[in-house]
Length: 404
Image: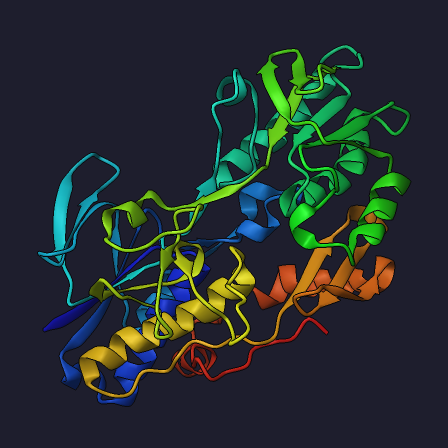
């Protein structure tokens, strides 16, 4: 029996497993002697792009039935070590018990995590919405503010980082705070961004829309100054400004799973492994990488996949397919994703939808909002626990939905 091990049940991991199992099924299923095993702490897909919304604790979807009907094995635990020469992974479960699992091909799809720089007080006195429990804890904290006497510090949220996540949560917060503290409460939401422009990685084209949406919802921006220190009463910026706040939320920057450091090969500044067109690590031929752990070229024009579910989903389909193809001795499918779009939630004001790598604005405000809601509530969710439907959706040649 040969085994493909998929590490992770995020967007890339789920789709890797389904795509691998689909190709195995097309070539005889169990008769091929190849099994697919997924390792993750829970058989769930956390809907990470929605963790900025209220109700964060419910932003997950069970994969148990989907794995069962498609014949995917699941091992509950966390991969702690990858032994590349031996083709083994070491797993630790919730009770602290260790085990090992051999693989013939490995798909690393363990995602990314929020980068927390060494800023005094940041770890002790800030919140995050990077993981499901962190987002749920943040929401619990927001509701606890209502039990405190009114003060500027109680009514103020400082968002560290004015990138994609920082913008989306900041745009949500004024209304969320008023729903908790009272409609007449003088709430304040402040984005602190060290770049001189809001949304530095989003480029110039959508910026006027973002700026308008934040301003009209009363969100302040402190640009050109980062967070220098945090304590239980607020933050001090690198410009020397003190902002009194009982709620500091850190959103700035992602880094790939630390498991990438255990695999030989070139990595970018985020720790992502360089992969070839088949999503294989050139220096570790038995390992494929998908999602936020992979630095993969999307087209022939020098564009690389972003750390987002938009790229993680097809990366997973191609990586899983190619891992199985390698064992089946059938041709691989080179990863290609030439189209690119962005859909940024801007709170009650609406959203903005862009097209292409220059992010030309196609829709904005209330016109764009239903597109974002459809993505968040339908498009990114797992397929139903129907074998045929799941395998059809896992086909790497399936173009998938478009933003428009």
